Image (tube, rainbow, N blue to C red):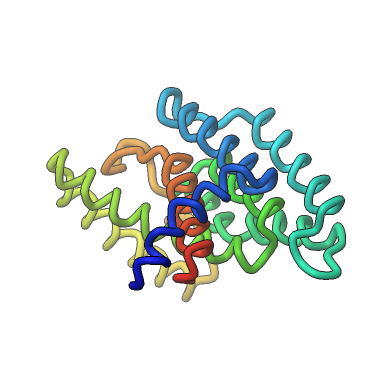
Length: 196
């Protein structure tokens, strides 16, 4: 990497914070991550305010050429749908689904998919580190085997009744709001630096 590009990196990353759209999103994500880490809950008021702000701001100041209100609304819908299956099998909380929907209101549908993928990678790495640190790897592997067995049998039978993960059988609860915040900020950083 040439020295000039390396020297420009801090300026590019600082631009994320000083842009009203990405700076506002990062602030909301940091608040959501702190709330989720402390209480294992993401406040609905925070998510609904953030989603409304994202829709209004991206409609008034479109981040894409010829952008309309459909840009933030389609991002909101994609953000809601991506993690909805995980919520339905109790692998994720409703607050996490709503948080990604809020992110979608700011970033639109395509970038929301990238954020979801980045968040899943971050979540996988953090989960493995967490279960190794707490000696719960065997429990996690048992859950994965059961989940896929019930998933395959359920798909054949046309039901999802056995696919829910109970609190007692869980290998631990990961504050996924922290993961979504980290994944979003990681994606935005990589994007502004030209890596994705």
